[in-house]
Length: 365
Image (tube, rainbow, N blue to C red; front, side, top):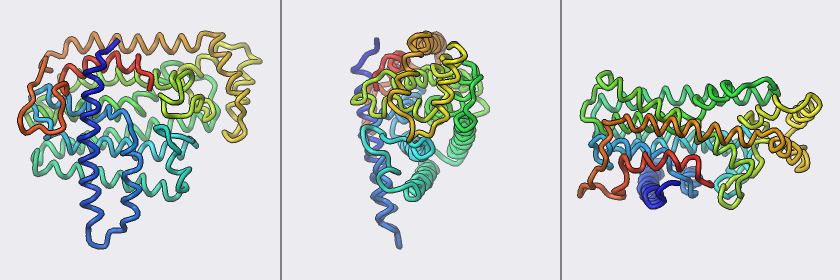
């Protein structure tokens, strides 16, 4: 369904580049006068667990696809990965999650107060990496990138607030459109839209973002469509994936009461008695829910076609993103590697972005 060579090589090269960049930056901070070294040991926990590295790979690939040098996007790409890991640390606390990337969540290992501080420190590190752009990209591009990050962060916390409110209020009348609105804010901006937009700003020779309105708008919509498909597939994997490949707790979203497309669908399509039982289970504290209760909801999802409904939606949004992608003629077909590009794959360009469309809905992790 997708070219595994292109996907795997680009992601693996990104992982090497980003881990090296983050390690180098953390070490520079650790060695600062008066630095509290034990904190920096914890800052490399989540980033060095084997994640997908989608966000930095998208950023680098777009930058190179419009003529930029991979190295010029590296600091920003690493910052995006740090923001992602900071969000994960806080998300895991807010959701009461037990596992992340196949290991125990950070707050389960060191306690909630310390984990919150590590998440905060990870955000601070990301800002420091973004400021490195001043010397390599100049003031205008650096400020444009910082503005993109500010928009991304605002959208993300708004989306998280929506989802947390739905869980806290045990909301029962949500539609697919409600989910899409939340998903665009919480997932699409920081996972796809912003990496696309920043990659374009970094790689484009024109430093004035106002002159790039049309391509930025097209990339933004592409990222939105792809991000919705990605999140629905992620929610599906949480229901029916394999723990070893997925790296997170199967059924965790139901334990946490997250209002996924599939959960909203089964609540609205099951009979009144079943719906009330679902809501009663969802209102039960996570630690008091049983595996039988989770299985009850899963069986109802199968009975009422909620799983199929989610899968069809994911494919529909991926198809729309593929159609839009074919119109993005400002992305060069291939971008040859240059001698100064270290840790960069030859596939960090339009080819990766094209394969990414099917990857997001046919992956198993």
